[in-house]
Image 1 (cartoon, rainbow, N blue to C red):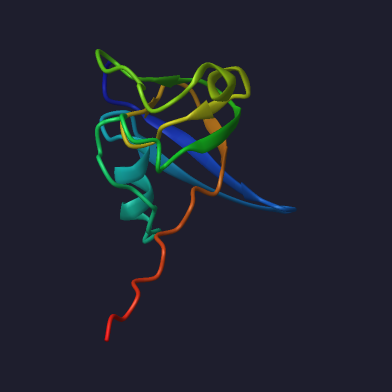
Image 2: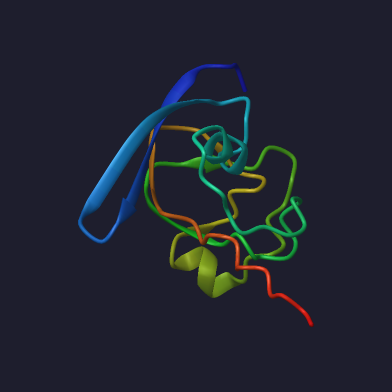
Length: 105
């Protein structure tokens, strides 16, 4: 995949925010550069913690497999942004934020 710039649009309810990203970085890396924290665990497409709805566009996993997605999630248009790169301009649901850390006594 050649490095080029594409647009990511984040949708939440009736609000949308767009920004430019490089095809060289995965979607979570791109979001983190924008100051957004995303819930993640494995960073390799296995756990499914970062599961995010893709509304429009295409992503590319390269040589990696999104093992954290089941067939139903794939059919419903979900992606794993920890390993997905933009193939076209995309629109996604705002990915889940990290859970607050619990204070243990």
